[in-house]
Length: 99
Image: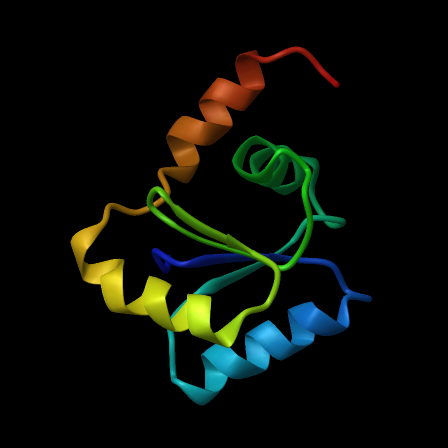
């Protein structure tokens, strides 16, 4: 499991651009389609407040939208931050009421 998580939707052109940008740099990441799994959707909502895709997450760092400059900054600091603890987040979301 990669420590970088990219939340996307299938019809989002910026999501495709973000994936291509990460792939060009041989970045290891998990591409997560928020329309395919309610747990992923809840995780995305908890991280972004439902603000948009693509959303690139690593630890406490989050970039909403596709911005090569901001993605580059995030990648540069990845070695200094923790990863998204999906299990902890899923547990917390499982205890939250449906919304």
